[in-house]
Length: 213
Length: 103
Image (tube, rainbow over all chains, first blue to last red; front, side, top):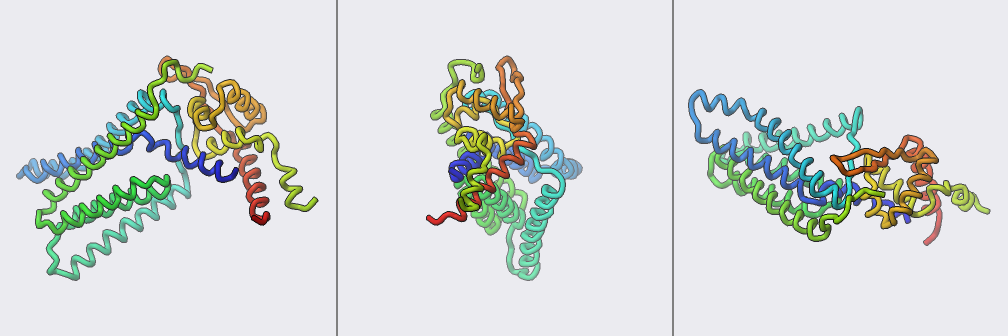
């Protein structure tokens, strides 16, 4: 019986990722970043400085829009079919602890990579796609571990491999970043489509109002 | 009767019913879940689920809010603080019993 309870709880946590909208959202954000780095690589002069500054706006604005889009899709597709679930947000010390831990890990990865590069001046690689690939991979591993979803481990592996390949490809940082985000966006959108198709096949649209008890 | 068996006999009977323990386990993992989600997860009929939720609500373990999402009625269920305490205590009793039992 306790195993059944644990499985029910795990399924409730996995429910957020059941329809592929997470991959869609993340994929769209990566596509936006790819477009940003493409523009950054091709503009010059004062426009270049403006584009540099606007990265934060792209990330915050894009994140907000994509979050709203995911919510809308879930309201129309997921909730009428399989129900609504909202999740607790951690507050206070617990949340702060996790943020600090994540910051230390990210700082550690960035610091280690920088040290290796500074100490070995013969290595001519594009650092940014390598770091992006490793960090995105790390986020996927954490998500996969927390929600016990295997496909996130595969995404982590693909991201890290892509980062390494692009780092040694000889392309300059901005071009290889564009390639990295475009490729990871395609992978995420493909995964999201597959997951959504499976979900829709398993859960046809309800014929009656879902909550009329 | 040994202490372990007595602890199992003292277990919260309202929660110990399988359907209600699954409902509470789900609600312990999330902030809120609607009737449809709980129905799909527990495999209960609408009537049965309503009865179990009413009993949990009467005990103060669950808070039920009837609202609308657009034009569609929505029944949102949340675990109360009392419900969380009772469920934690139940889980600990059960865990203790299982740990002290030979396979």
